[in-house]
Amino acid sequence: SIECRHVGFTYPGASYPVLNNVSLKIKKTQKVAMIGESGCGKSTLAKLLFQYYPDYSGDILFNGTQVREIDRKSFYQHIGYIAQTTYLFNDTIRNNICLREQFSEERLAHAIEMAGLTDWLRTLPDGLETVISENGKNLSGGQRQRISIARVMLKNSPILILDEATAFADPDNEAKVQAAFNVLAKGKTVLMIAHRLSTVTGADRIIVIKDGRVADCGTHDELKNRDGLYAKMWEQYNKAAKWKVGVSNA
Image (cartoon, rainbow, N blue to C red; front, top):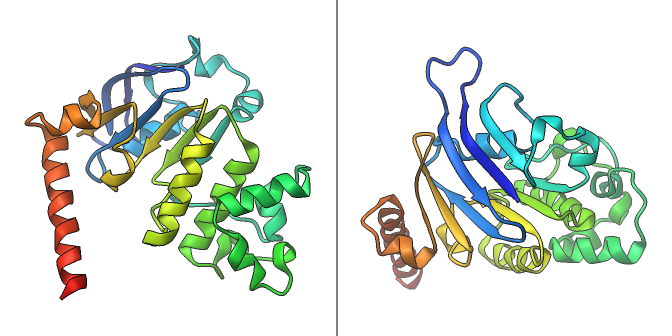
């Protein structure tokens, strides 16, 4: 379980906090989505959860233990994290996925397939042994992100933090990756930060963040029937989806 109690955070040099008195709880094996407008503090909160920024106020607990008191190396072994920006090494694709740990070829192939990398790797003469540049400058955004997804698939940690994990995926690959996440998430505690509302409707709970605070919380059906931020975002999302359909049929 993950719990935040009155968490606040201000970036160094900033005049106002990006997070202010945030309290929430994610039960063990629960799938929770976090949504909100750009800049509301979603990604910052995700980074606080795995000790990226140490200088915050309030309490962050995993299974009732302060995250500050947990051994960092042991802690990271239990968390799979996909960020908006993937850091890649000037090394082979294999080493970028395995991070130099040893895994069976069968398990690696399964992670690659689940992340939607198989077809692309077949087009490369050296396949998994292809060397990529630092931060994958010679790759597309979708390719970089799928390598990050394969890492998490391979690691198979009990806690997943997904920060807009399908942001660079095209519609076809997004559906495939989302299906893979649904399989991966079974029996795990999941916090999913999303900008596409279509990816959060099946979550056990949706937390709405506004101006660094928890503005609302509930299931998709509960929130869309309230006169709140989520209902407005859902209405805008549906209008945009209908407009795209109309343009494609024109």
